[in-house]
Image (cartoon, rainbow, N blue to C red; front, top):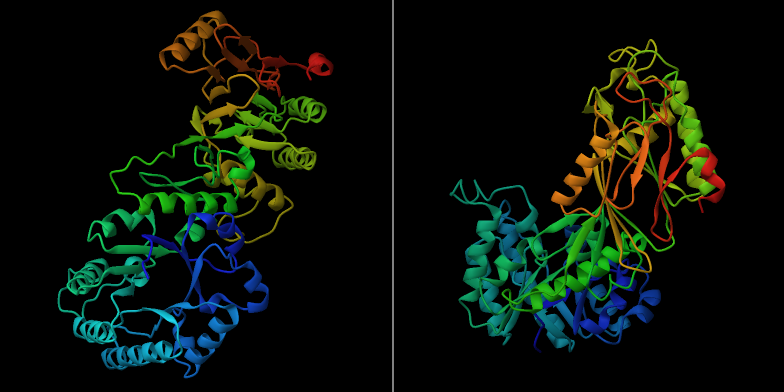
Amino acid sequence: MKLTRYIPIVSPESIDIFNELSHEFEYAIIPYYTIIWPRSLKPKLSKKVKWILSSIMPDDLLREKDTHIKFRKLAEELGITHILVWDMPTYLNKPEESLGNTYTSLDRLEYFIDHGFKVIPLIKGAYEDHIRISLGGIRALGFDIAAFHISEYLYTELRPYPELSDPFMSAYDLMVSYIKNILEYDFRQLLLVGAASPNYAYRLMDLDDRICLSGYTWYIDAGEKLLYTEKKNINVKNRFYECTCPYCSVKPPLTRRSSSSIAQHNLYFSNWLINYDIDYPVDVEVRLYDLIADYSHDILIAAGLYVGHRDSIWRGLIHIAKRLKPRYLILMGNTLYIDGFGKGQGEWIKFMERLMELRLNGTITILMKSYGEERPINITRRYKFLFPGEIDPLMDNLRETIYDEALMKLIRLYATAKSKLTIKKYRDSKPLTLTLETRPIEEKDVERTLEELARERESRALEWFITTSINQPHIDTEKMVATPGIWRRTWNTYTKPEEGALYLTRRGEVKIIKGVDIDGAI
């Protein structure tokens, strides 16, 4: 038997994702304790890989006297001949149990050898002398490949002290010392189980050429929207991404953001990362955007709704959005009016109801950070917003109000709000990239402001540059700068406010939209 350098751990929950990439792998590990319905699982076990049944499982199961027998029967039922055995609880704070379970693990090895399995032995023991007992027994049985489970060493927050006298030693330090002890023996390969995260892969592979890595983080991290790249893991909960790997490059932008697609990418990337020399240039490039609009997607961009102000005319924008039915509605500038007089929270509720209606028709709303006194509004610190009317922030902080449902939706919108957005739009010709930035209204001539924006766009090498620097809708298709205007009748500033919106069509054209233009917009 010769193991590959990377062996993914696969559960029944993730097996469908793995199967799409199973041709990339020779081995895969499936944990015994994750299998509930073996009959339904068996047909899903890809014939393209050699499956290894793992005995690493919760301690309660391991302490049951007949678990190894049930393990054997399940392996036979599934037709699995390769097994990773035998795991037993070994902890520093229970030295006697650790020593006894180290011997028990060796006994179980002989049990499975006698039943004809191809065994990968697990090295056990909490202390160095226990590990050496395990190593001696494994070598005496003739094994030249062994495995060491290191997940708890990597992820625990505890230190080995006081069981070990060094108060400065970390669990990671202890793990490395044990791995070095193991590598003193003439094993042909050492499989580190639970070690395949890019956070640790490079460091662990540097220890010795005989090391192989295995893990399940490719799937766990994907559930947290963590995307693997060559330098670091990137959180894409609030981002879109492009990737040149063969599994991402064929998918549309929204599909790529799904946890299953990220898991597929992570699995492919882990294989690249570990199976090639660390100096080998990985030919997978990842680029991040705040939004990627597909070929069939259009975007409506508006600013300065001031919902809650007595002079806000935000309903006019909603009317346009209802007619256009854009895939995305981006709201720049001051979306809510929180301070001073106005209609307040009642208007916010109606506003959220309209956004929900748009969502039911397929429009996704993206909020950008607004300017309140030229500073981004931190909505969770605005007491007028969180505690409307006579609600006491201390005495009535659990009191329900008619605003609660709308309030939570608004908080979620603001939680993902950014003051800058980079948007990529796919189209038949070269893709289009737009940069959106919220800014305070300039107190100067419109033409002068547009010229300054054009110079800034050129100096920053931007394609399209859209800001809220002017409270009127303007667009210059040659200089590729634009402002969407605002939806408020009064404004004490250099220029008179005027409502409008920018419309990025499905074909990738940037237009100004006003109420009178709606019928010809599409």
